[in-house]
Image (cartoon, rainbow, N blue to C red):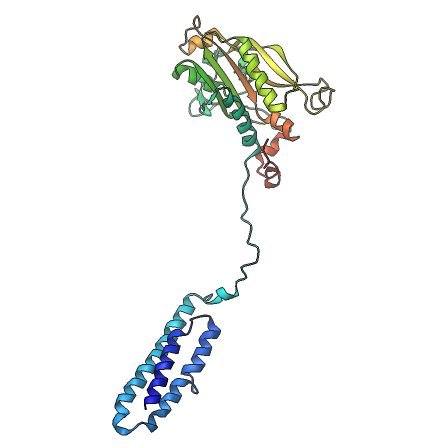
Length: 344
Ligand code: DAH
C-alpha cells in the first residue's frame, strides 16, 4: 500500500511536469495515462491487492489521481484547438534569414528639393509655404498682372468652377505676396511647392510640376546680392567650376528681370540635343521686385528693395539624374522611384 501511494505521488508529479506541446505530444500523453493500457487503468488494477479496510480511502486517492490525469488532458486539448501551432516553436530555425520588409524611398523630386532647400538655408533663408488653391489677387493681381494683362497668357490657368476668383496657383510666387503682406521685414524666405498649368502632357511638360521661389526684402538689397546668392546656389549644386550667365528678360513682377542659364551639364557646353545645341540651359527667372508689387503688399518701396527668383524643380532634377521623361515622376512606378536612394 505504501509503495502504491508513492507511485501515485510520483505519477502526479510527472503529469504536472509534462510540457503541453503539439498534437503528437498530447496523443503520447493519452496513451501513457488514459488509454486501455495506460497507467491510470493499471493503477486501478492494484485495487484488488489493497486490504478491505483501506479500500475506501485508496479508492478516493485513485479517483483524485484519475481526475488530475483527465483534467490535464481536457485542458491541453482545448488549448491545442485554440492554438494549433502550440509547441511548434521548437521547430523554428532561428538561423534562417528573415523576410525583408519592403521600404519606400524618398521621391526623387523631394530628394532634389531637400537638397536645394538645404543650400539656401545655409544662406539664412527659411522655408515658407502657401496654398495650392489660390485667389486671383495673390497669384496674379498683386504681382502686377492685372486682369486682361497679356502676360497672364504666359501661364495657362486652371480655374475653380465653384468660385471664379479661385484658381490652382500657376507659380509659387503666390507665396511671396502672402509673405510680404503678413511678415515683418526683413524677409528672407524660400517657398517650395507644387504648381499647375493647363498644358498638354508630354515628355517635356506636365500640367503640374514643382517650383521653388526665393525672396529677400530689406533696406539696400541690390542686384549684386541676387547674383551672388544664385551663384552660391549653383556652385553648391553643380560644383565650383560651373559657368552661368544672366540674360535680360521680362516678368511683370520684377524690374529689371533676368533669366539665369547654367552651362549644360550633359555636354559641358559643347552643344547637344538636351541644350538644343546652345551649350546653355535656362534654370530660373529672377529680378528686383517691382516697386508696384511692394506697394501692393503694403511695403514702402522708397525705403525697401528686394529680389526674387523662381526655379522649376523637374528640369534641373532631370538633368541631375539623367531622366528623359517628366511623366515618370508622377506615374508611381516603384521600379523608377527606387533608383534614387543615394544622397545628391
Ligand atoms: N513665377 C515665374 C514663373 O513661374 C518665375 C519667376 C520669375 C519667379 C522671376 C520670380 C521672379 O520670383 O522674380 O515663370
